[in-house]
Image 1 (cartoon, rainbow, N blue to C red):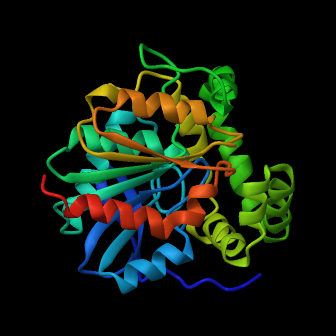
Image 2 (spheres, rainbow, N blue to C red; image 1 turned 30 degrees about the horizontal axis):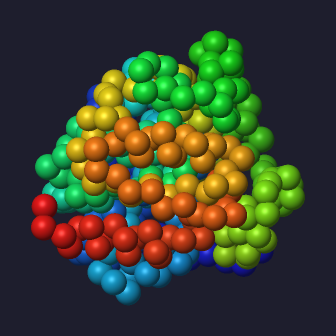
Length: 301
């Protein structure tokens, strides 16, 4: 397994009484800020090496965040997705960031939209990469992996914490297990994800994020499942910030139809179809994605 460079800065910021949010910073310390919200599961280092290098070369500051219950973030369960936005705003204030873009991969998508909805004066543009769609309410759509999440929510509500502790204890000795697990996921995935996970730099990123970024704490995915199966606390159709949405038309986790549905709800959105790609395809297009978001940033508001 190839080595992967550590972030330029890692730390955590107090966001509430007795709570902290962990972050990792890549690229330029003084550039345009882009908050990158990881998938489910994931942590603050789940950012492609190509994106890190591009940011350093183009005066862009990328910040990966740990959601509550993974990495350096305190375990915590939000009442709804919208509650996350205050934590991100507090962290941005602490880091001296006024305006920013936000990217949400998969399970990070709802949180990115929540921040865009709550702070339209601060969020210049949002990029969603195969994002999760609502499962309840007037904007809901069925199918995909969240069908399993909805079915599992009652069990997760009761046993998610203990299960997370078991997973965390396994991860404490996980290096011999993690690499074969990544390989197995790749072999069971459609061709697009299989090809991406065969690339050494992506395998190294996922392993580094799992073993070091995640800091052997795995409560966050269970908290995600619970909050995704409730009302999000805002309407997708009320997100006025420009949104650019990337979705693989062979996505086996979040169906492509979910992306189409979400883009149809958003007032200012554009869909980028990744032909032949599955759920992780956007990670292989990170430079194109950041370039597009910066182009939107350059447009008059």
